[in-house]
Image 1 (cartoon, rainbow over the protein chains, first blue to last red):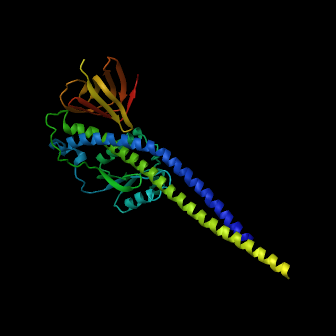
Image 2 (tube, one colour):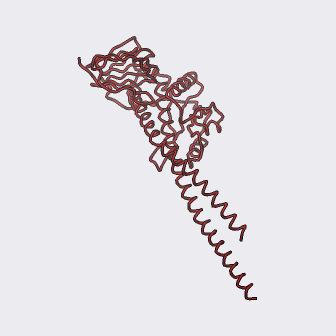
Image 3 (cartoon, chains in turn green, purple):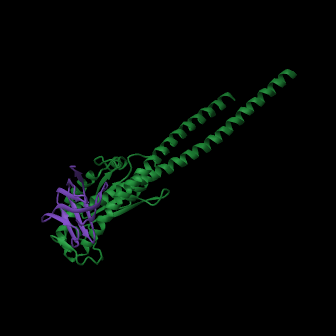
Length: 267
Length: 87
C-alpha cells in the first residue's frame, strides 16, 4: 500500500503546483487584457481614418499610374507574419503558422519571438512593437516594393472576434486596390492625388501593420486566458480524480491492516 | 477668433483632440496654415514643425515625423507617424 499512496500523493502535489502556475498565468493575461484592448482600439482608429482617405485617393483616376497601384503580375509575395512572443496560448501561434504555410510566399518578415524562431528573421517583439518601429519597417518595405523585390504584400495576423474567438487571417496591403468610392468632389488636393498617395503610402502601411499587431496581441492575451482557464479546470478535475484514488487506496490499506490484526489475534 | 475641431492621431493612439484656431504644418508645397472655415483639402505633410494655436490664444509647438492632413467640413484630421511636443 505504502508505495501506491505515496506515488498518488506526489502526483497530486505536482498537478496542484501546475494548477498554481496556470492560475498565475491566467491572472497575468487578464491584467494585460484591458491595456491590450485599449491599444487595439487606438491602432484601429488610426488605420481606419487613414484607410478612408486612401480610399478617396485611390478612387481618383489620376492615381492609377501610381507604382503602388499596379496589379501584381509576377506575384512574388512578401508576407509579414505576426505571432506571439510566448507560447501557452492554445492554438494561437499554430493557427497563424498553419495559415502561412498554406500559402505561396517568397519572403517572410516575422514579428513576435515565436515567428522569428520559426522563420529565422530579425527579432521583433510583438508586445513592445512601437509606432516608430512600424514606421521604420513600413518605409523599408515600401522601398523594396518600389525597387521591385516583390509584387504583393500581405500581413498574416489574428483577428480578435471576441474574448472567446480569434481567427488567423490575411490582409493584403499592396498593391492598393482601386476603390469605387465617390463623393470626394470639391476637395482640393495639394499638390495632386498621385503625389499625395505616393507620399503617404508608407505611413498607411505602418498604420495597417500597427493595427494588425495590436489586434494580434489582444487575441494572444485572450487566447492565453482561455487556455489557462481550461488548463486550470482540467488540473482541478485531475486532482479530484487522484484524490479519490488516494482515499480509496488509503481506506483499502486500513481495512487490510484491521483484517490482518483481527486474523492475528484470532489465531 | 473662430475655432475648429482638430484631431491628431498616431499609430500609438490619439495625440491631441480639441478646439484650435490655427494649425501650421509643412505641406508638400511648403508651410501651410489652416484656419476655421477652410475649404476641404487633402495634403501630405513633411517632417517638420507643427504649431497649434489653441482656443485661449496659447501656442503649442511640436515636431512631426510627417503624415497626412485632411480638412473636412468643420473638422481637421492630422494623421502622423509621430509627434513630439516641445511645450
